Length: 207
Image 1: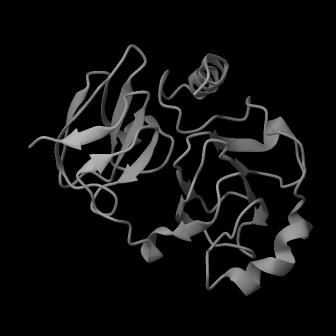
Image 2 (image 1 turned 135 degrees about the vertical axis):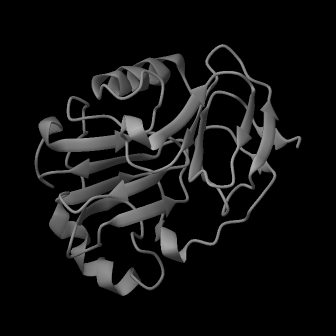
């Protein structure tokens, strides 16, 4: 992640008043980007691809018609950028939350009007996601406990900007965070929901 991207992302996270380092989402003060994929553009392909992926790729998707509220997991990538919107054709003030992590998980809420995804690949509903439970965690992303990663004690290379969070929920709210830290060692509990990590390097289970 470039220093410019890191600075911008941290500023957006501060704007939510939730965490100075979380990088999970950004609030309505963030720039949602141009309206390159209006809502109507993707509606024709939504039903045809529903059996393959809940959200097949780039586009703006209306909540309640193109997709239902719930938790979704994406393939991700370095250019992944998603936003929950109060208006699919609005501007930055209509961004409810935004995420830039290369491996994202998002909870789309009942009150959301639309969801925009750019460069994240296909999204799968959490109930349909199997994952590959592992004892290693790649850097930069949200990893689901019991699907992507096993509970246990993990160590990473770490660094000055290393930050991790143990999560009880995927919502970008302070009470979703069980614990956060910057040390390159963490114990993920069996009842944790997910683990968020940025700039720590890869994690390996040691116990």
